[in-house]
Image (tube, rainbow, N blue to C red; front, side):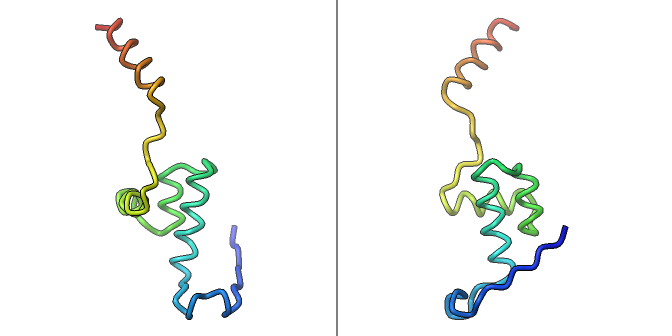
Length: 82
């Protein structure tokens, strides 16, 4: 699918908004809304997953979405296996 988006010059923040910036912003938004995985968002942003993860970290966006309760349940389950 190809999407063509025209952004009027008055919204380009002094002409500094690039296609890459727009794709990155879209990828981050879709990742945060859980519409795409980390890997898919990285691909959309034309980055490898490690670069994308670093970008998220620089914006203080978590990449691990496991709750404390889930972690405790996983630890308890692993103890019964051992």
